[in-house]
Amino acid sequence: MDKIKNNLIYVVTGFVLLCFLQTCGTRGKIIDNKKEIESLNNKIDSLTKVVSNQKDFDGDMIEYKMEQTMYKFLIYEEDLDRGKISLSEIKNRIDE
Image (cartoon, rainbow, N blue to C red; front, side, top):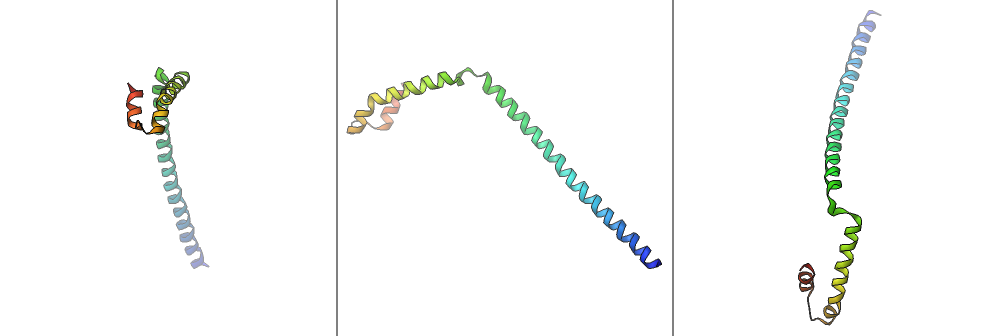
């Protein structure tokens, strides 16, 4: 009976020690992940502020510029179909 008690104490102590070490390792990984997530959220927030402060990214302005570019392309589309002009030449003329 004494042998069982002595062995039981070692087994229980070992089990508790293993559980403790496993918990510490997992908890450390969780803390590291939370710090990394917080850092990424801060970076995203700062980028969002930068983008929102720029006035060039207004949705109406982008749509207007896109329509103007499409209209300019339509001017040269017939010449492109006939092989009189290349896409790079059209791009250069539109960018002027």
